[in-house]
Amino acid sequence: PKRTKENSRNNSEPIMPLFRKRKDKTLVKGKSAPKESAVSATNARTQGSLDGQQQETKFLLDDNCTAKYIVRSPWAWVLEDVAESMDDATAIVQIETPSDFLSKKLVQKDDNAEEEEEEPSPSAATRRRRKKTKKPCTLRLEIENGNTLIEAAHGISEALDGLEDKDELVRTIQRCRCEHLELTPPSQLLNWDVTKEECMNLVGASLPTLLANNQTTEGRVAVLKEPMGSQGTGIFFVKTADEIHGIVEEHRKRAVDETGFLDHLIAMKGRIPSWVLQAEVYPCLLVKDRRKFHIRTYIAAIENLDSDDSLLDVYVYNRHEVRIASQPISFDENGSRDRQSHITNGAGSDSTERLLLEDVPELVERDMTTKVEKFVAQIFGTHFIPDMHKRVGYSASQEDDESMDYVTKFAIAGLDIMVTDDARLYLLEVNVNPAAPPKDTIPPKFQNHLRGFMSDLMNLVVGKDAPNFMPVSDILSR
Image 1 (cartoon, helix red, strand yellow):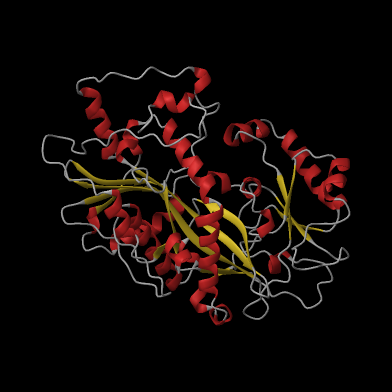
Image 2: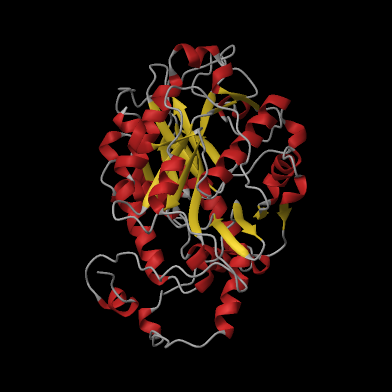
């Protein structure tokens, strides 16, 4: 039996999802299009290819239907290209604000109808302690047929919230009790204002290293990361506790001196994020004349609140990207780390090369596609899924926006994975709501890849056939 909202708040058992009855999706009097069942929608989504063959796809839009969307600005050019590829480009329309969606107008219709008995407002003590700052949303998409809402999907799920910052990923690994599996390089958290004595006690004389390396302390290098850095910023290669503390202390002083900076962080994150001291993935596999790289793999998590089996359907996209450093690694580094050679996602350079995995012979020869998909499926289909379920269940129990009754929530993330020279894989980061590169910085084939990714994503979230998204359950069974 479904619990009431009040019982969900007061019960000491784990919070389960709360659903309101799905409402009529017709704005004016007339026949409403039937809602596709959760089972049939899932079946449509599970047609992903498991034989490694990517399929060219377009966004599938039924006759007489219009797709309205809001997209993050880095993806705007991709959506424009998707619209231009349609037989009727006017059938895909970009709108300005969520209030322009039909799902919002349906709520306004309900507000004007006969009032139903309202539930008592919860006391302040039973509400969330803090309202989260709205995060970037990659895509909101709604399909309309006249005044009937056919399908609505918004990328606002909280399923991946515990993974989006570097320090939160470390905490999630600890919470899920899978540190011993080395899904990510061994890591330590350092407070933003750690003292020199505390730093010496935490780090000691030995920096973290990969367990399989048996690397001696002498010459060992670790990676110090700002929790919110991106595109290679905020990454430092360090050798000693003194060096680590010097970097953290410099940033602490700047944070204190900048008026309102710490208050802004607390308002945005609910905390002051921690630094991450992480083992270097070494020796790493090199490609294209000794150049370092990482693999970018996309996943999608779609809330499936009507299902009795699982609150989430998680998918892996089978077109994997490879991001390659701009400079080769020197034969005689002697413990030094040149940023242009060792940072594969920017490093202040616009020459980071982006390819598809299928175009890198060294990775194709090692069957890296299969290895990556299995690795990602194990993480998000086995180890992280209980934590993700709890977040989705709690979020559903707290939802108070009635327009969400009409909306399927989903989350999208780009995973950065690094590979050692003996083909061990390590998850470096989870980039929730990732950005697309500017169109003029990537070759035509990569542009086409991003158009295909967005078309597949749009099909997936509205329950259409998306052959390049593979359910993690299918990968694990394979």
